[in-house]
Amino acid sequence: MSELGTAERGAEAEAEAETKALEAPPLPDVALEAPDAPDANAQPEEPGEAEQQDEPGETEGPEELEGPEDSEGPGESEGPGEPEGNGEPEGSGEPEGPGEPEGLGEPEEPEAPGEPAEPVEPEVAPDTADAVSDTAETLPDTADTMPETADTAPDTAETAPDTADTAPDTAETAPDTADTAPDTADTAPDTAETLPDTADTMSDTADAGPEPERAFLGDVFSKLRDRITGPHESAEGPVDKYATVDRPDFNAMEIPEVGVTLFRYGTPLERPDGQRAPLFDGPPRREQTEQGRLGDCGVIATMGAVATHLPEAISECVKENGDGSYDVTFHQVKKTFGGDLIRCEPNGAVTVLTITPELVVQYDRPDRPAYGRAGADGVAWPAVLEKAFAGVDQTWEADRPGQASGYERLDLGTRPSHRAEMLTQLTGRPAYTEDIPTQYDMNGVSPDRQLLATFREKLDAGCPILIGTRKIGKDERALPKGLVDGHAYEVTQVDDEGLIHLHNPHNLNDPKPLTAKELRANSNSLFTTMG
Image 1 (cartoon, rainbow, N blue to C red):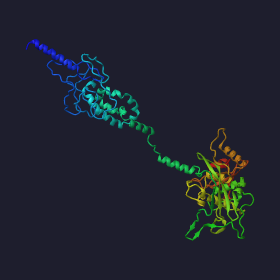
Image 2 (image 1 turned 180 degrees about the vertical axis):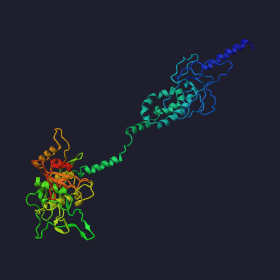
Image 3 (image 1 turned 45 degrees about the vertical axis):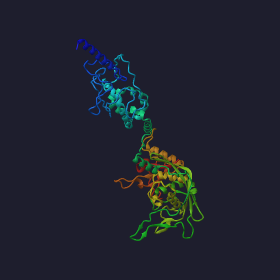
Image 4 (image 1 turned 90 degrees about the vertical axis):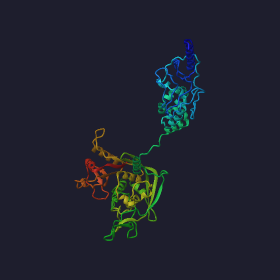
């Protein structure tokens, strides 16, 4: 063949190759350089053809097609579920396969042949131009897997609003999606536009948060504290209550070895001449109260203190009925706590108890009460009032603590708070507990002087004062000045020498007067008074 013919055919082949190269499928969003002219002897492939994949997950683009810069040849899509490269990139721009996400836009129109594309710096890594023709085919599977990933993404609800605004750009940047599929899977919350309902649901759940768990131990201790220290009023509010007190629980103290029962109920208020012991003999007085065979020194001391300072309160509290019974009226109490201190106030309601005349007696002394006695005057009110305190627990709310009841409860002793409650029950006036001073005050007054000043002030105002002694130590035999350990006393006087006088509710063996220092050293940390 002549050299001229060969040159003409070479020129025609070169022009045909250039024309076919210009007809190659457009690259969405990435402007590629015009491909170099192929070798004259090479056979150019038809646009849209792709070799059959040897292994799943690898997609080859057109042979000899190079990217704008450092392209390394056919790109590898690492995204999940790549299809085989048998689709055609040209057409309507709608990717094949199910699960097509909404909002995918049409690819840009190809540039007219003969107009070489200007090189443009790509916005993504250099390998994003690889496998351009197969990217559209991989989009359906990527879109299919994105909702699944979004279901498990905890932050989907938070990022959904921003993602929905940028969703249309996903179709335009399809090449980026193919090469960065792993990153897309990691950042699946950005595709939450396909799950609007899920995003709303997750957002509501995140706002509501999990149901807070309650601390078990904290809840138990709180309930225990409330039951012990909280007010115990009726759920309906303060209401008057009525009950009949017949035979409160008591300890009979049976001795089976000798067949003796030390205590039982009897009628000690009935005299041999058929008369009954008078309820009162003049105004009530502390000397008419006497503690018997029951460990209720605090009850007897409180009754004696009120009888001395407010005798009218006792007279109004206890009334005698024509059938031999007695009516005792207690003021109901509202309690306010501040640390270890308590303040008791009347709540406006009363409790009226009808007391039968039977009282606990000792087996060998059936003619006298075994517990609260009438003293030398033989009056009935101390024993009747003590029985009312034993039976008032019949009217308590079910949540009030304590298993013992009746006289057995009184035998357990009292605390300063109990004595404050009884003062208010008897008088209808506020009562409270107070700390015995232990330090100098802000004005430099010593604890002893503070205590003496407080006691004098209260006694001058006609307010009862009650204290309790401490327990003896291991190396002690007894408390000084004739004090009984673990015993309740009434403060009766502070003399001119600054000595404090106490009254023993047994109505005998009063201790010798004490200095303020001696009383502070041998008493509990609180005292009880009114005001």
